[in-house]
Amino acid sequence: MSPLVALVVGLVLGGVVVATVLIRSRTDSGPSADVPGLTLPEAALARRLVDLIDPAIVFVGTDDAVLLANPAARALGIVRGDRLIVAELLALAREVRAAGSRRGDIQLPGDLVGAGPRLVGVHGVRLDSGTVQRPGPVALLLQDVTEARRVEAVRRDFVANVGHELKTPVGALALLAEAIEGAADDPEAVQRFAGRIAHEADRLGRLVRELIDLSRLQGGEPLPELLPVEVDRVLAEAVDRTRTAARAKKLDIVVGGQPGLRVRGVENQLATAVTNLLANAVAYSEGESRIAVAARSRSGFAEITVTDSGIGIPRADRHRIFERFYRVDQSRASSTGGTGLGLAIVKHVASNHGGSVTVWSEEGLGSTFTLRIPLAEPADHPMSPPAVVPTPQSKESERS
Image (tube, rainbow, N blue to C red; front, side, top):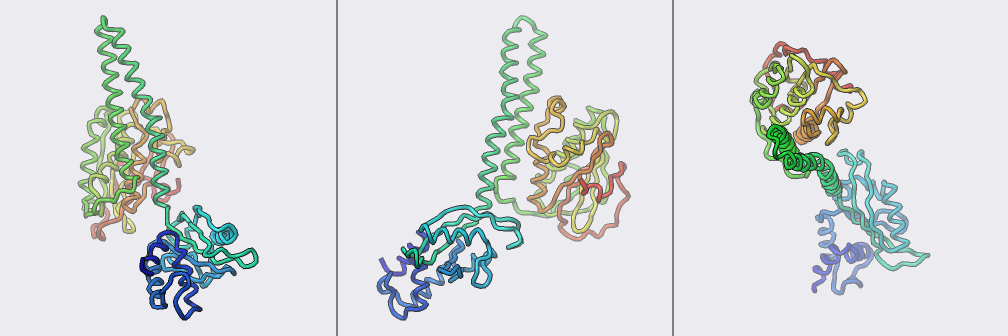
């Protein structure tokens, strides 16, 4: 095996060989004692390899000074000058110096790189045997595992939630099948039970579809190419999908606001998000009333509001309504056939498009959901008159 190949292998296996060569090359003028035949030009090439490799690598000396940090490490913001500025990493380096090797996950503060908290997996290795009196330097290899851990958590929650939520419709179908079998000589009972089976089957199918949609949004799959999307088309499609359910409850859906807005996004996902907001408004509205959906341009975003005059949301529940499977009223959810996933899907569609969703609500007065999606281009249209049903002020929407 050539010296250069040995360096690469050593780097992949933990950085021990490369680290030793690079550190000693600072003082040695001849071939390395660790890798026979390795000269300083080859050590410079090894340094180049360390700089180009993806994992962050930091070599820490016996006095806790940073001897070497590749660009990936400095990009994480963990090194300032010749010092590690993350106390947990410094403590782990000292443990490695005493014990020889350590592995663990460390949370990096979000203000280091300005991208939110990051979780890194750290593998620390002591570069030589050292002694108690003269411990050797250590190498820390860091890999960003934030997304990997998030996906693992989503999968665990997904399995747990599916197991819990599928029990109800599956159990109901089994009981109804037994009831039909026992009422074979009663046509009216069979017809009634068959109708319930159809209802539970529809609920089960909707639950499976929404679980698949949510898992795709949360599972780290790359978002399809973001293209200019006409907001008017999104609203028209969402209204068309929910008009039948609204008419069944004698509800009118009124569209207003500013026409001609364009956002960058995936049209079917945006239509699904607005449809879910409208379906939620229909489910929780009573009597002959109106549901208003409107769009306007504000601060580089298209704001799509869905307003109803339904039962409203208790203050204690507002911060949880975008959680998966969370329902404010379990008994009402059973009667409406809701799955508890609609608003969670809205939240993740908004997040994947670089936007947000907020809610204003008062019990007995209704609710207004505001979906904000970045505009594709500046809007030159003047503001249209407000929608037929006035929406609360934006500051009230964000207050909750």
